[in-house]
Structure formats: C-alpha cells, structure tokens
Image 1 (cartoon, rainbow over the protein chains, first blue to last red):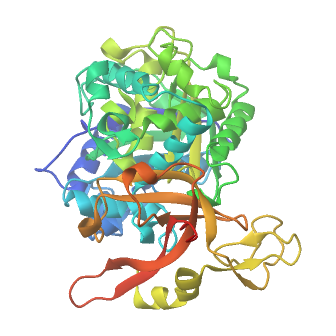
Image 2 (tube, each protein chain N blue to C red; image 1 turned 30 degrees about the vertical axis):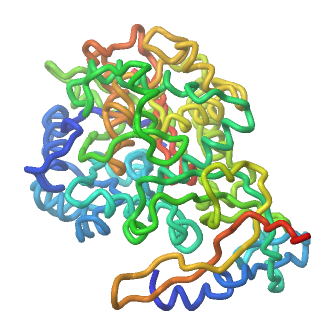
Length: 387
Length: 134
C-alpha cells in the first residue's frame, strides 16, 4: 500500500445558503481544493452525502457535481453512511490512492439541509436509524441521543450542567473560525437557560441544521512533491484510516453507553499509525451532541467510563488543555452539515497541522485525529493525520 | 413506512413477536435470520410477555413529520423481561410519573396517521403497570 497525502483543501463557510444549491456549494469546495493543489486533472471524485435523495430528490449526486465542476470522464460515486458519509468517502479515496488504482482523487463532503422544513429535515435525519423499529415510533435523532444522555446521567450520577463545558469550548473556538456558522462565545447562563429539544438535550447541547461543503485532494505521498511547489503550504500525510460498525439500532447495543465502534476504529488507527492517545495534539471529535463528546473521549482512550464529562468541567479540552477538541468550533459551533462534517473535520485538521488555523491555531500541532460518527454510534470512522 | 412493510411487521407491532435462539436460548426481538448473541441461525418464533421496565426516556418537543399532532410525547428504551430492549412511546403517563426502572406493560395504540387518505398505523406503546384493584 502507498502512503497517501492531502495536497489541497477547500471549504465554504457553514451556514444557511439560501442562494446556492447543492451543486454550487460542492463546486466551491472542490474548486478551492484543486486550485490549492495546482491541478485540474483528477482520476476520481468521491462525494460523501447523506440526504440529497430524501431532502432534494437528487440522487446520482457525484455525477451531478462532477458535471457541474467540469470533471468529465472521471470516476464519480457517492458514499453514504449517515452522518459518517464524509469520512467514509475519504476512506474510499484513501483506499483508491493507497492501492494504486488512482493517482489523484478529490473527495468532497456536502450537505444541503435548509431547503426543506425543519420537520422534513428531522424526518430525513431519522432515516439513519432503524426505520421499522426506531423511527416508526416517532423518535428523532436528537431523541436517540437524549435516551443515551438520560441514562448516562442516571448511571454515573452526573449533574445536569456537567456537559456545559463542551458547548462553551466549541463556541469559544468557533468564534475564531471564519468558516464557522456561529462565531460567538456563549455563557454558562445561556447554556443553562436554553430551551429543551428532547430532555435532557437542550439547544446548546445540540449541533445546528445547516448547509456546507468541504473537500480535499489526495495523492500518493511519494508524488506529493510534484504538487508542493512555490507558495504551497505543504502536504499532510494520512497516517491512519479506520472504520468500524455497531448495531444500527441503539436498543440492540450490548451497552448503549459505550461507543464500541469508536473504540475499535480508534484502536485500529492507533495500531496503523503507531500513534498513542498521548501523542495526539488535538482531536476533532463528533460533538453532534455534548453527550457524544463525553462518550467519544471515553471510547478513544482519554477518560474512564462515565468520566468523560470531567474533561469538560476541568477545561482539559481547551486549546491549551491536555487534549484540545473542537478546535475550530466542532459540530456545535462550526456546524454539522451531516454528510459534509467528516470532511470539515479533516480540512480543519490540515489547517491546524500546516499552522494555518489563524486565531484558532493550537500550539505545536503535529498529530491530529478526526472521528466521524454515523447514526447513534453505528458507523464510526477515525483518521490520524500528520505533517 | 409502506403498506407492504406495515403488513410484514404486523406480528411484531401488534404482539411483540420475536424469537428464542435454539442454540444460546436468548430472546430476540424483532426476529432475525442470525442470532445477534451467538451468530447461529436464529430460532423459532416466541411472543414476548409485553412486560418490562424503563431503561431510559426522553420527552421530545421537536418531532419528525408524521408525529406533529402528538407532540410533545415521551419515547423510552424499554427493557423487556425476556431480555431484548425496544424503542417505544410511553402512554397514559404524566411527566412526574416517568422514571428509570419503572415497570411498564405493552398496549396497542395508534402510532401515526398518514394523512387523510393514508393508512393509520397501530403498534406497541408502553404504559405504567396498573396496580391491581383491592
């Protein structure tokens, strides 16, 4: 297998892009990534997307985007694995280049969630769950996470304000990211007084519905020198790429409070890269809900079971903490355009590793980990990147 | 859900019909082809008692299309006494009633209506176990 590097990144600010369609926002990210890589020639486009069929009545999405982007006679395919679609698409791109099947691949995560009503989008998101045995009973995606959080608070005797630190950290960091949806810090009061969506999850525990697209150009590391010339900021190597699954339904998990797929995929990634949790400079985890931050930290080696929330309380997760997370706002503040999120995490990790994260820059960032979760923990993809 | 899907799952929605694995003897709901516990071929049908307890719950204020008329409502993970867990709405409750560990029993209720000309979907919900009359 060949080592794979990222030689170009692109992203559109996350938000409500009423004036742009899915093809426009995807092209924006792809064009920026290709321009940075200094190439117009690619072998393949892999698109990570979850909801284009159900919300936009548009499937065959990768070919639509390739066509609109002027990429003709290339391989184009959409990869779908709910909210983990973005990182899953990156894994397919990684496999294509690592295997020698392709030399230059562009991967784009894209989602357009604001063209439909809130209820339609909520119903679309619920398709990540078991349609016949979860969604049929009226449980939303927020509802599934609320079921986890309620039980977690009961089992580990966790106070109701324990998760505030995750949200406050995300917003404080997002305020320094020009591509974030919410560029504004929040107070503890704002968290404590936020309205409930599904008890005990309030609006400040939850990531927003939004539009976004982020892309990266992948080449074999041995060929990266061809692209890194002149003012190019440098290649970033993919040190590990791993994915694992769990039962699709939350109610079928052996232990609904443990992200086994995060444990398995992160362990695979640690072995592939030779990196240990202590070597990781920052961790872009999947903070779609604050409870997921706690569970991810526990399953990935940063906290004991039932103690992930202590890290938020101790500010171990801030830019100068033991394990900085959501360094450019995370899903909570940058936003969570579901199928695009995994690629935003990777693009932001590349920014950090190049030292191009502006005011959000982490000191001495040498190894970054990203983790993208599909469903209520059913598909979990971990990547480790290095300079 | 389509008419065909509703028809296929009627025994599950109306009577919690699952299976008992012939190899490892664990209860399974809904029926599967492969036992999730021992990976052997899953076994003969078995109807659950409908009794269980609340493992977790949430009161939902933002709800998906198709459930707007009912909101807010409470969804729970119910641990059946045979072992499997199911996702279902709680019914016949007030906010103060619900707590983790509460014994509940299955009842058949309307889950949703698919508009004026569409199907009316019935299935299982759970209510607090009624105390026996003196």
